[in-house]
Amino acid sequence: MTTAASNQNMTWTPKASEIAREAGARLREFFVQGVETEYKGDVDLVTVADRTVEKLILARLTEVFSDHGIYGEEGTRERLDGEFRWYVDPLDGTTNFAHGFPQFCVSMGLEQRKAGLKDEEDGQLMAAVIYDPMRDELYEAERGKGATLNGKSITVSKIASLAESLVATGFPSKKRHRNPNIHFYHEITLRSHGVRRAGSAALDLAYVAAGRLEGFWEFNLNSWDTAAGILLVEEAGGRVSNFSGGPFQLNSAETLVSNGLIHDELVKVFEDLFAGRDLMPLPSPEEFAAMRRDREQGSGN
Ligand code: IPD
Ligand code: CA
Ligand code: CA
Image 1 (cartoon, rainbow, N blue to C red):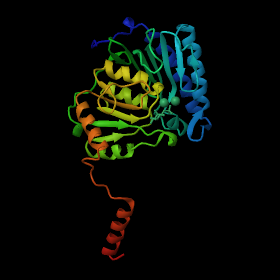
Image 2 (cartoon, rainbow, N blue to C red; image 1 turned 120 degrees about the vertical axis):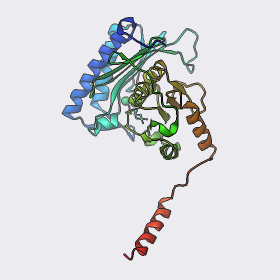
Image 3 (cartoon, rainbow, N blue to C red; image 1 turned 30 degrees about the vertical axis):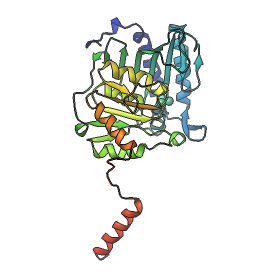
Image 4 (cartoon, rainbow, N blue to C red; image 1 turned 30 degrees about the horizontal axis):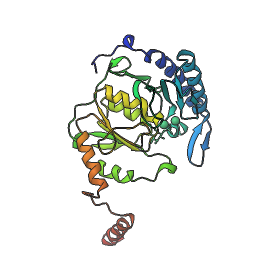
């Protein structure tokens, strides 16, 4: 990784970033005018903005990288047998967007898949673009060339203990909710400066790369959520893994990233929590209600 990245040395991001900016501008227009929310399946939200912007990105990527494949959240599955493949999330943070909460982005990550790779095997992430249209923040990275925010080189933070860290996580929609993340949220809140849950996994990853967060984890993300952000974190000098510290995989069932310095500590917390060790006692709602009643009686009310 080099420390200073300049857009001129980049192979794919100049064109991809133009597309992300155009896509982001469309999202901003939809956001300002307000859109109706629909349900995709029984719980996931989707809006006209998600669909329109995915179509726009598909058309633009096809114009500039005609032999590249595209794998998009809203159903695009184009040219997936080639060497290069873009994972596209046209709107990461749909629930925020639908509620007028201005935390969302466009995320595009490019994977190179050498011949002979099996479907379930990952290739190499080569390029990443994440654009936050509300803050006009463009994150870019290419393998071996560093990561930038609005053209300036970024690196992960230097904080070396979880106790002094600000970290983030996310909770997916109900359908994918069969996981114990609420326990991890609770425990890591008690062991750090705090856990943010801002609703856009791609921006959470970009924030780790930019040194705004020391770490991030989530259960059961998808490749379109993580492909770009993972490369950004790596190129900014951070570490990415599964929950045991082993290799991260693009199906993203387990995503754990950090500035590198707190990674082993986080992996140890995961190991302890999965083993049921070191859980800090938390009153159940019933126990809390009993304490409340006692308090009220004690104060004579
Ligand atoms: C969601 C966001 C959210 C994360 C969910 C994702 P979407 O993506 O990244 O932060 O917690 O797991 O599904 O649906 O808004 O594109
Ligand atoms: Ca997403
Ligand atoms: Ca999305």
